[in-house]
Image 1 (cartoon, rainbow, N blue to C red):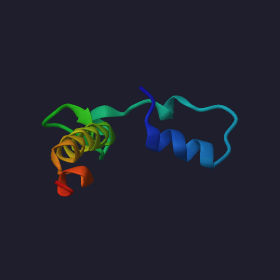
Image 2 (spheres, helix red, strand yellow):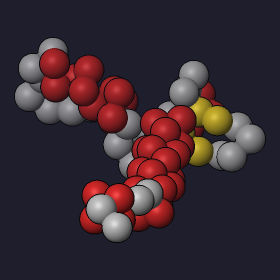
Image 3 (tube, rainbow, N blue to C red):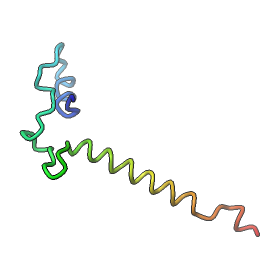
Length: 70
């Protein structure tokens, strides 16, 4: 897996070739979550997806404008 943080760094520096440095460093990286054995960027994406799904459920349960007219 390519690291989005390192990959972005090399793109911003306008490197023609991306070195192996853009590969995930796993346990050597400060963003690595040892308890779930996952990159925190990926964990954030999963949590945002979960939050979005819960908000969508709440939206469907909210009263709609048509319900107030009765």
